Image 1 (cartoon, one colour):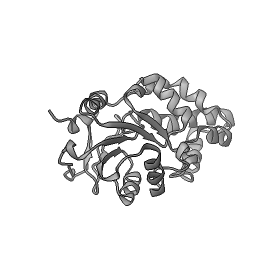
Image 2 (spheres, one colour):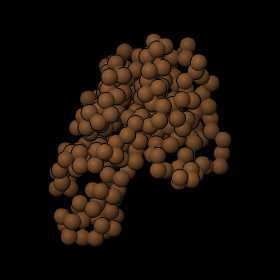
Image 3 (cartoon, helix red, strand yellow):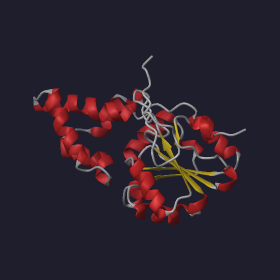
Image 4 (cartoon, helix red, strand yellow):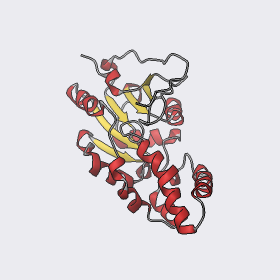
Length: 231
């Protein structure tokens, strides 16, 4: 078994009090689903296909693509499969389907979703992922049935890293910010939600099953959602 590396600091914890929460907002990739699929897809599989098509080495293709990805980070283009299909000259949705067997739900996620439903919370999936990615992953995992509503950033018109995103989302979902919990594996997203005024912010410290645990310096952190389930 691969050794888990943990940064040398104690995590911050949320003193769980579900009486203070009415609504639960959950990110998808890295939070509910194992980000190993996405990391492998963009960092290894796509460069391999791109290299073969363009007759370059995989390492050269990887360096070029990682630099290209970086330019769109924090924008809707970052996760837009149509954008990347056009930009790279590849059928990105079809490539995702080729390795969809790697899509997996993190441990204890289903238990947590059932727990939230049992204690009467509204549950929404809120993701930067493109609608075509969402369709592939919902079909593969069948977790969509656990949510009251699923919202992609493209529906809102901007990425979650922008505090205005949460203002628009509030109008869509009609929640009280101070009585809402958001769990995400991206600190920039949690920072934007904090600026907006979100009540409870939870950082997922191990987004990929093949990666290390990295606790946040600024937000309460969990490794698995079982840490938020109370008797």
